[in-house]
Every structure is written in C-alpha cells, then in structure tokens.
Length: 297
Image 1 (tube, rainbow, N blue to C red):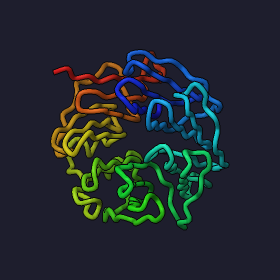
Image 2 (image 1 turned 45 degrees about the horizontal axis):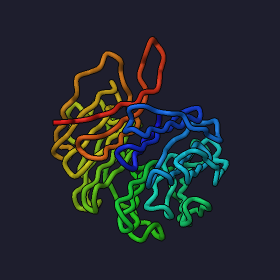
Image 3 (image 1 turned 90 degrees about the vertical axis):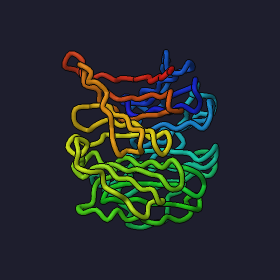
C-alpha cells in the first residue's frame, strides 16, 4: 500500500501495487476494492471531496468524478526508467503531478492541470531534477521537493517556481515535504537517511537539520504533521512509529510490534483520527497493511 487520503472523516481511499484501489465509507473500518484501468503500481491518490479524486500510477494519471465507481485514464507518458511519484490538488480544477523520466528518472517532471485533470501541461522550467513530493497549503504556498536537496516554492499557483536552498552538503535526496501553513514546514530523506530531517519556521528561508539522536541513525521513511506541533513519522530502518508534540524537536516511539511495519504514507484529519498504510512482514512474506488511529480521550 503506497498512499492514503481521506477528504472527510468517513470517506477514504488507499492505493498500492498491482493496480489496487481500496475505498472505505466508514472511516477505515472496512474496505472495498474498486476497478482500476491500469495494472501497474499506483503511487499516490488525492481527493478534494467524496466524489472527485485522482491517482498517479507509474506512467498514467487517473480521474474519477463519482467516488471511484469508475476511473478513467486522462494522461499517459513514456517515462522510461522513471515514474510519476505524487499528485496533489488545490481544488476541483487545479492540480499538480511530479516525478522523473529517462535514465533512472534523471529528468524532472512537473505537470499542471487547470480543468480537473482532463488535460495536463508540462512546466516550462529547464534542468529540473527528479521531483518526489508535493505539499499544498493554499494558492500562495505550493511546495515541491526532489533529489539534490531540491525544494521549490510557487506563490502564484504554479506559474513560476522559486528554489529554496537547504545549504546542506552533500545534498540529500528529499522524498517528503509538508507545510501546515506559510511558515512551518518539514522535509526528509529516506534514500540518504543519514542526512536526515529538516525543519523551517520562516517559510523555507532557513532550514535546520535534525540533531543526531536516534532518528539520525534510523532515518525517516515518511511523516505527517497535523499542525505546527503535532506529528507522526515512520523510521526508515526498523519500521518504528513515533509521535511528536513539539514540532519535531523530540519524538516518542510507540512500542514495537512483533511484525515490523513499514509505513509509506500517513493521513490525519486531526490529532485524534488518522490512518497509515504500508507493508509488514508476515510468515516471511510482505503483505499490505492499513492502520487506523483513534484517540477517544
């Protein structure tokens, strides 16, 4: 399972390998499979409400307008050894897809739609590296990260992009970025996990690298922040889950499960309700897993 999204507390979608699309109508208690028009791995999913959603596979973009009762391919591209990696929408009309194409995805791909994903246009920027993840706060705060420590910001709904410098050497392969408002954001690297975890509180002008505690050695697979203080992460090594209540300065690890769980995506509606998807080892096999978090205190 590669990605999870819930546009409200009850309706959610999970996508994964082998064209798997799962839908829940009861907050993740039970799941039903939906028919997918492609057979390969599905990388990311995004819904703006319980009807309108999009998925990017390795080389295609899918759209539904009826809650996944039917999915249609709206865009495909031969990306060679590359792939699409993330898809995010600002609203029902404007959305973005990032990835890489060519030899091991060495050429960055940045697509934008203004008509709900019916058609897509390539960004005219030259010499983009592979891009991996998108975070949308509002029209003036759209972020993208990628290899070589790449962090891009658009303040005009993707018309132009400004590069923000991490000032970290060697440059990390950034895999996840998230902003919860125009000032507070985080980025991490799982491929170069020793290079770690970064935080900004001034809108990306200055990034502070996470200190060399246990996170430094375990690395971060992915993370999700609910607000500037409360967040969750999954470690790159060991598949541990951890929680922070101070913006990522300190993390509290959950007790280890007997079966190692590797989380690839989180989504939280608030501090008390969230989901995580990935895989776990079971009888020497890797199987998909969906976790539901509830705090009724």
